[in-house]
Length: 367
Image 1: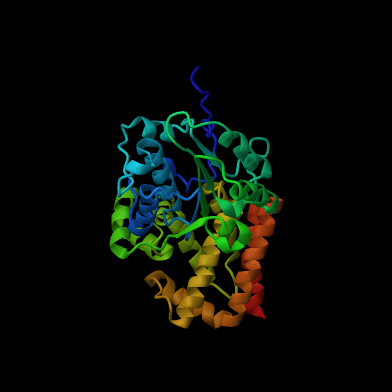
Image 2: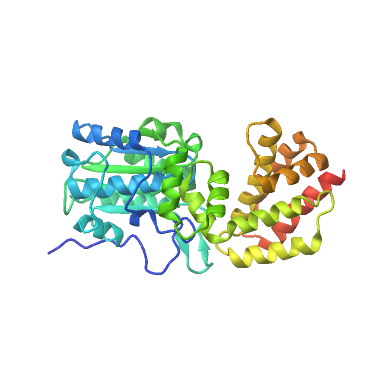
């Protein structure tokens, strides 16, 4: 009897490891840049020293998940000894099709699950999900020589979940390969990092970035692609999602409100809050907090001379500098991060969070 095929993706449910409306990384046929990282993985596989756990690190949207899925496909389709240098696997290959359909029996995915009752993603990757790996790795590979577990992402794990994973890493199962994605590896348990081989992905070069965006977002206009590429600093996944989703317009609206400090235009503020939450319901507080934080960070870096502002940012940043001292902006940025995490964890009113964030800036400017 053929082995039962585990479904790692439920049809029509949102996916926490997918960037906006962009195709899921398991469907991406190309990877831009990161040749050195691929080379390390291929070299280890050819030498018979393939590590059981790879911690793939780097900024969000830089290509970590795309690399992990590409490696998983190639390993399942070719085998470790026959991995091609570019980890390519033709889309017509059975392993590619099985992975794309999330139905390969030798591959499992761990990520924040969707809460059907509350209609949102769970705030953490729970320990129960990690414990499923024990049963997965207890079986022999069905179609090849390895079983692959992909975790996207490690940052979502609490201490309980990390400790459960640590037990597996300390006594790795036979024929097991774990691909662990982390945006901020410094927040993980040191014992987890010490038991993994670390791959640090760097932001893409400008030529690679241009090629990636032309492929990922061909429908976006040149102006929006240029702005997105600047704002996302070498992370093509983020830039493509930003250029094609209306997020750039939202960022420009945020800049417009910041330009009215020390007295924020209240009608425009309420309009932005309602429009943002309606247009980006899945991103909510986290999405808005990210865009406002981005403007604040770029303002501070521009003041220090480490970042060249966009044309649309120049007058706004000058106004921000006049309204609030640079040191105070740093404090306000930290306050926004803490408030955003607290509001998201407690599922607080999204519109009110937007209003509170700008009212705090207004109070700081007036004082």
